[in-house]
Image (cartoon, rainbow, N blue to C red; front, side, top):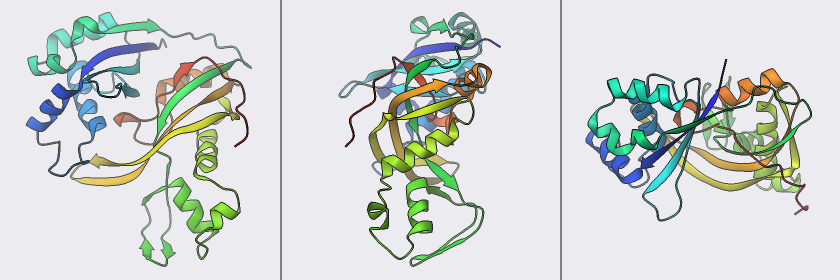
Length: 258
């Protein structure tokens, strides 16, 4: 199955207006989930899951950015679909003439090193309730992977993670390494968490706050078929909302120890 890397230009102010007309921007600052808006926009324009996973990159102080995504369809096929079902207000956000694509390789070399850039939501879903000093965390809750490890390993020690040298970056890189499964091996000495913040993910009628991290690094391909599937499906949770897309770059050298 072929895989295409898609690039679309997104007018972010128009996206906010489009989402606002549907009541998705929220009444409080910081509650607008841009990923949710894009999820609905591209599904309505190109069909359910046609662009998955995706990632929006917007330069600072700019009102236009690039939406990158992986798709089984190329730009021409996506335009034909949107010509039929996209609405005029969609096209104010994502103009079709600026849609572009390239065919991704399928003959990956085992042992090949490639660089990557990925935005992730490093969370784990707990299967059983957890008792803490603040109360009970119910089964099924989605917790920050760093917070969950701290609760489990050091429930009564505030600085336990620091003493055990388990920084947020170390925990997140371990989390990402596990998500690669047998497709690739993460080079942790050449990988870094370059951005971290907490954001609200709007799902249904509720909003869930959680970790939002960007990782730049290098990995080594270990299984060509599984690596193609890794790109196609992405990593971690919330992949349909702007997380988990592995954008490939040039590999980097191991970074100096901090």
